[in-house]
Structure formats: C-alpha cells, structure tokens
Amino acid sequence: MTRTAINFWLDILLLVLFLVLCWCSAILHFVFPPGPQSHGWSVWGWAYSAWADFQMAVLSALALAVLVHVMLHWTWVCGIVASYVARRRGAARQPVDDGIRTLYGVATLIILLHAVGLGVALAWLMVEEPSLDSAAPLCQTIQSA
Picture (cartoon, rainbow, N blue to C red):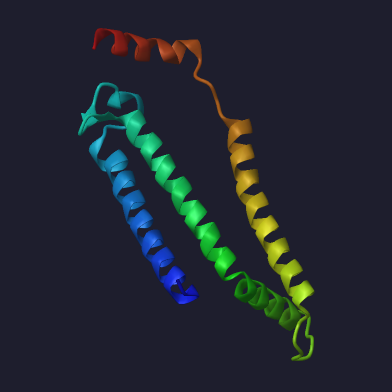
C-alpha cells in the first residue's frame, strides 16, 4: 500500500471516529438527563455509564489515530515549527538542520502534552467531594426510585 493510500484511509478513519464521538456526545448531552438523574435510564440497553465508557473508548481511538497521523507527517510538522521559530528569531532564509527541526517538533509535542497533563492534574487536585449533608437528598431520591 502506498503512503498516499495509507494517509487516505487514516483520514477516513479519523473522520468516522470524529463523527461517532460527536454522535455519542450528543446522546449523552441531549438524550439522557444530567448526572445522577440519569440513574435507571437507558438507550438501546446501555445505561449512562456504558455510554460514557463508549465515549471514552472512541476518544482514545481518535487520539491514537491522530498520533499516527502526526507521526506520518512528522517531518512536515517539524519543518513548519522550525521555520516559524527561525523566522521569529530573524534568521536568514537558510535550511534548518534535520536534527534541529526534529528537536523543535519534539519540544512542541512535549509542551502540548504537558499542558493537557497540567489541566487534568489541576482538575484532580481541585475536585470537591460532596458533603454528607448534600448527599443525603440524593441517596433518598435513589432509594425511593
């Protein structure tokens, strides 16, 4: 299979995964009632938690496919980042060494991944557990249902 064919089928896969993620997210957001109120509800035999698990699985597959897509275009990505950095520094229009270009690309990827990790870490550190007083009405609602 040629590189062009691989890119084509990978792009088709990315489109399908994106559409499935949008569809699943719309079901979770518009079909189910919010949060704890969705207890006992189901769509096609799947409860809210099963749909959320499916959404996470599709998101993970999409992230993996995007990673493969970036890997297939790695030289191009590194070249664009390196030329942007060279232009910002006022360097003359001379070709950037492949090693430097790769370092710029890897540094950009590391920065992006750290930004995502920092966002998750901040959310994990700032999550608030419900107090016992606020959980009591919810427990009564679930038990009475």
